[in-house]
Length: 318
Ligand code: CUA
Image 1 (cartoon, protein in one colour):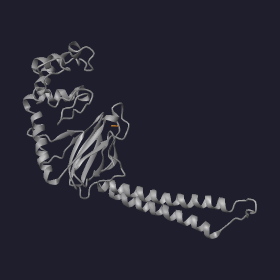
Image 2 (cartoon, rainbow, N blue to C red; image 1 turned 180 degrees about the vertical axis):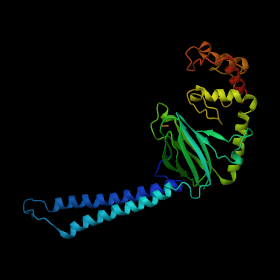
Image 3 (tube, rainbow, N blue to C red; image 1 turned 60 degrees about the vertical axis):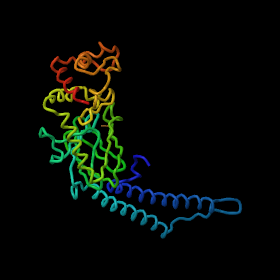
Image 4 (cartoon, helix red, strand yellow; image 1 turned 30 degrees about the horizontal axis):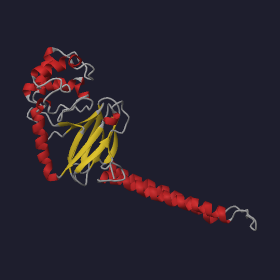
């Protein structure tokens, strides 16, 4: 099965799938008994040539039965739901790490815990966008917040969902049985980019998680080299992030080309400018429509200094 709640691959998702299946099966049994009885009685006892339907009412045993049984069922469902919800809402017991996840139009920003293994050279901690990496068989607490409107975090196979609400924090926990890549999706309509607000949950074998963290920290460190830090910060603060993706940063836009290794490309502007160097990048960013009429990339009216800073940073993206 695909990314769907009925294919639970972790204890959190399993808890809700269990309730679903128990209630679903009970509902089917009730449906068969009630509708079966109705159809049977209608056919067998109906008024027809050679058979006169008897008129009667009141049957103590039956009335007791169809009062007591549904009451017991509803009580059991309540107790069961209460028990499972207690497990599902217990975000603290046994949680081995907490990731701070912020929803924003239209991406998820993953702030890894302030632990040494996620620490960058400049003293900040690892941040990712859209992709969340966790170790297998580990209870991970997700602390949710939102920068703008209500979003909802949901990775169907693993568990959730929970709203990310502006002005407050909410939390949930996730845990995966097997390593792999799981798809998730923002589940609260949050604007035109809602459908693109995906979550990719990457689950690593426990022994390999440290290696992944080391690589991600090194990659992020390269991107935040102090010499080009200003350009990076300028880029990430501008509208650029809405259209372009740069792996290892919060830029995760899908409209424009990915820039994770733009400095290694042969050309930019759909081949109009090559090679990729300071001169061509500067020309392009200063006024894209002048180079390529009709391009979706607008002239942002940046100062020469801003363009210079951004270009210096882009040149490090190899
Ligand atoms: Cu964010 Cu829908």
